[in-house]
Length: 87
Image 1 (cartoon, rainbow, N blue to C red):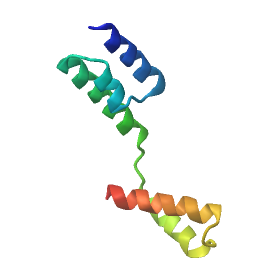
Image 2: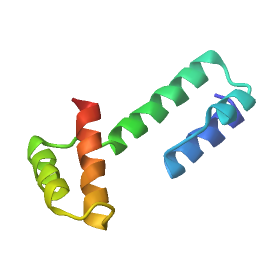
Image 3: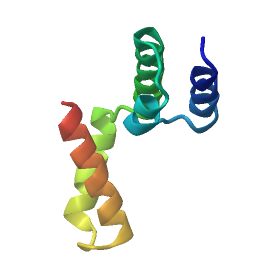
Image 4: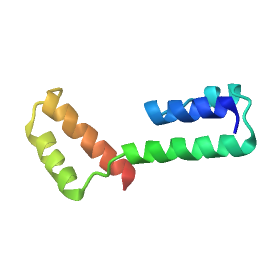
């Protein structure tokens, strides 16, 4: 494996992310690019958490009772939107 691949592999392990530009600029082999992209997407998927139906329902109750624009309302709105995207 190339020196650039090892550096990007270390950066991915440390930071959890790489950009497409970083991968492209490193002049990697196709196998190295595939490996880095697979690891990058695995890390992104691991960061995403699934919203349960119970969390969704609780967030909807907060939306019904909290003042619009309040921190509670905004957080509940994020939960509702994330649940609806994953459904």
